[in-house]
Image 1 (cartoon, helix red, strand yellow):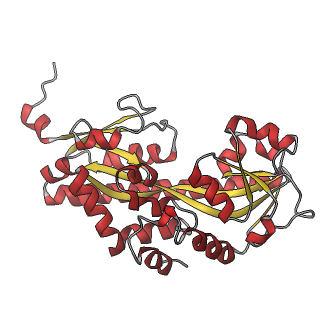
Image 2: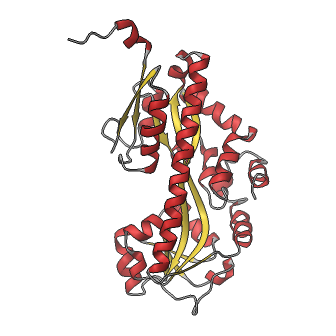
Image 3: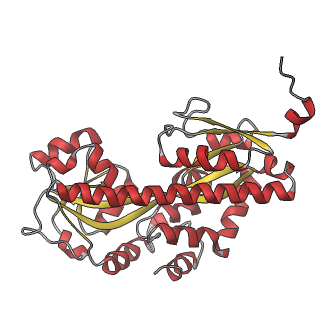
Length: 316
């Protein structure tokens, strides 16, 4: 019979992580392989996938109430509590994965982080790269080459149906068409729409490459997640443990970021092998037009003054 010292068991914090993502998700793999082992001396990392512990969308509230220690959360979800977080879920705010990291670590993020800690009891440890959304069209490049927003004039681009997504579609220069995701393949096949926007993994998974001819690497939304951690649990750790846990979270995020970027590169090669033309447009022209559309709109009303300019200054 193996006896575990109550003192040793008590000394180790139990870190339950709940997410709607699967165990094969790059973020989950990195947390299990990098974060968990790195904190094993003082904590037990216990992941729960597919929303099996906490219902999707309830994770932050569960951390706040002490029913959960950590989760992976989005800027969109945080914006339901703090509308100013919508800036981090907006077209062309983040330029790439490295820019996300610079923004998260910059002093401009301090008021955002502090508000989440004070009002929700949630500490945002680090930022994780989720992927880039691009424009995917059924017409070959010989018929339509998209280098600037005006080139998308009259293009019926399927976008998700919410007001925010439709606004982004118009800001890109296209004619956004709301449509259920399950209908997109047939709509492209029958030319009911001219294109759709999604990250490359979705283009492959949904086999949109079978009914399209080109991908314009607009990177109009560089999506992210944050590792959300209980402030109450954090405060119970020693300064050394806090340092080690923060380093573990950063290392996991970096591992996930590298793997996701590599996967995107591999998918570019795969899609070219399928016959698709893939190219980068004038991103500066797109960024300037899209941001101009947001400034003064209802979507930007909650953004703190000067933050967009500070984010842009951290770009390439």
